[in-house]
Image (cartoon, rainbow, N blue to C red; front, side):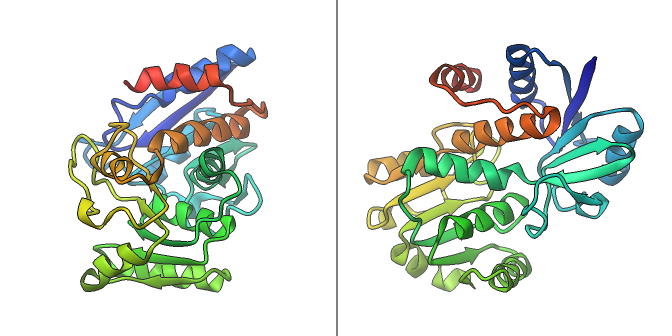
Length: 280
């Protein structure tokens, strides 16, 4: 029996997620057919309708990426993984018996990647840029990891304000940072997090001025194409511990595979090395 799965997003033609999921399927003896559902350039593309079509077509599930993670939220009848429902966005949907279940493997994958790099070290005070779909998941992950403060910056103030209110209601300590206070918040932080598109091949640059890097302890960049973003290079030069977008990508992919198939795949150096070679 073939399990049909896919990734729905916009501008995803270069995604390596099909290769990862099909590789895991081969490794674990699961017949996987994983496709791309790219809404970029499609007139009137409706991610809600397309997800419902996947359900009708017999898909086992789909991953959802930018810019549709929050759009598909209302489709979910129940969580696929307990504890993910409070985040406000889903990047993994499963279809069974006419029911759509949701999970957020950005949330779980980030925490696994963080612990892989930093062990039991707490995040401390964190300045996070970007309060969209992936930002919501990372912010909740930071809260679960024990961040003492999550300072949120987004060019869309309504997004950072909404996420801030949700985090505080969940018992975490969050605040909104506006443009005029950004430099001071960066300097005061123990960790810096980029959850914006800045740094991607199509959006080059570095939101964090290299001149203010060095007093922090660690950084995380959600961008993984390229692997070495301008932010990561500057942070490494400043002597900060770096968690890359690859760490998030590989662990959220492993978590998604388990949700889709029920098979838990342990990470290994061989798997990490193989997956890294695909992103070069």
